Image (cartoon, each protein chain N blue to C red):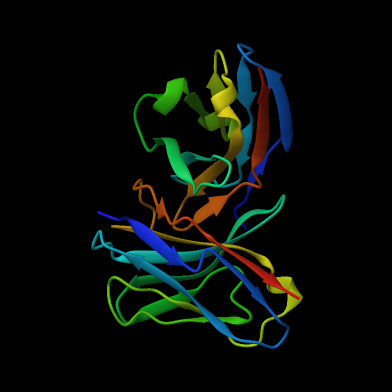
Length: 115
Length: 110
């Protein structure tokens, strides 16, 4: 299994541009998550999904959109990039969410810079 | 709101020194607790987790953590660190959603 994969690894955007961060998992996990990691701030949840066709906001959803058309894929869309969105983005998945003892499996991350 | 506090943002140790990283959380109900590690240039990996039973849990690479319910703490320990332990360590609490602490950067010097 490849686990959780993310593309691209690095990207530089200009203010106002849009892009989609791709995330895929081959473990047939129901739950998928998008986090952003800022220095000294830990990871903040942007959006999550409990299954195909179902998504919900996390702690910091503004400026982002997601979709979940299949179990495997969970893309994150930035419509109008802003410097405040400069961050490292991690996608994660686990088989069961909620108050679960199951660990989350993380992808390698996408480092995004908005200039 | 639930929160996770990691007391040390940066820790510098020499090889063979002992390590203890503090983690406290604010939630009174049932929680599942995790420590994740992020080696330089890599993604987060699970070190260990606690969900029930023995409050002293052992993880990979000689790490262990103790859950003290009365103190809302889940501190990470290792008796003797190695240079390869240089990484960022995150405590996380799952009480419905996974909440991360801000992380502790550990640098181990040979």
